[in-house]
Length: 424
Image (cartoon, rainbow, N blue to C red; front, side):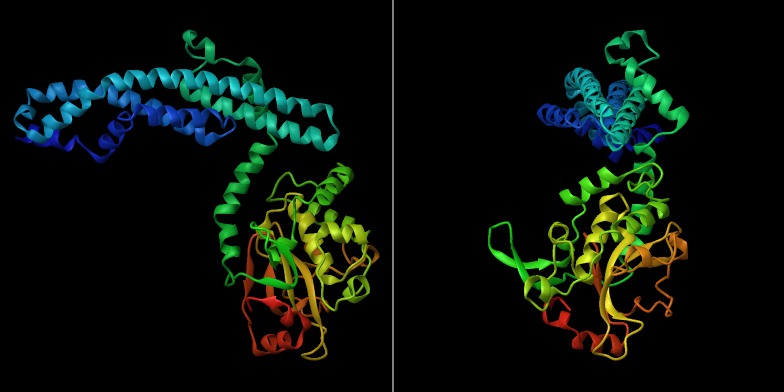
């Protein structure tokens, strides 16, 4: 009876799941086709490995259950049902093995083609070459993970899976360090923990700007989500970053955990174009936020416009968006509740604890420091243009709002923004 009990326990949830993998061949074939279409995906490699392991496990199951027939299993209806299912899928298992083999060949070929396309970027300028190297490392290391998981180079019969160019590139990247792979891995780490912490430190909400409207997906004109004023992939922004990126004063972020210098380089670079002008002088309206590309065309704007543009440059250059916020509120130097409304930018230092103020209306020659850690923090009340009473804040993904004091609430109601903002 003890042996029979052990046999019954073999039918675990994991076994049921593995057997289920081989019931529908069309579903397996469809999934493999989709995996082949994503040749840079580490998740695709992991799924290939899962399927290979499932084949190995389910292939060994019949022998286990045949042994169980002579150990009491034949007298147990549950065991016999299991045995029938295991036997019934063996032909499908053979088919899946062939499908997986063909898919791996296609996946390796797709990696090779992607590598060739990425390599074309090496003939471009500094920015393009850096981007090409990142992509080539990423592709080669994806191949390396697949190769080691399936033993492409340990078995002479695996010639069809071998790509010596990708293999050499992967070895070089692993030995000397790499661009994008480290970047992606580190970005995942900060995104899962620290980013979530900061994204949830204040109540999230939807905040809309009513002073202008844009077409929605149906073509109907509607008020604008404030997050849409930050446009990291704006054509002007991306071209500007590309044209002015230099190894001595880099604007493009390569390590999202260590980008204090790039943040200050971007801030100083954007300040060279700064020219202040009131909305009414530009548009004839008392309140009118410009998009980054509109600000570049016009060449002048107020604090809202320059704050949105600076945030677009920072995020567009690769600073993680959870480290960038446009903050609207009353400045520390305000003389009363009806004075001092301001929009500016705060960025999170590499220590991921300290927010520093990059004033949106500071010109290049007025920047007080060259290093980010020396710039005023959110806690410095001596920073006259820093926000003392926060009304709301946002980046290109989220918006946040809460009044920390009655003064904050009252000063907001006295400011012109209260007439054109929905959601507060």
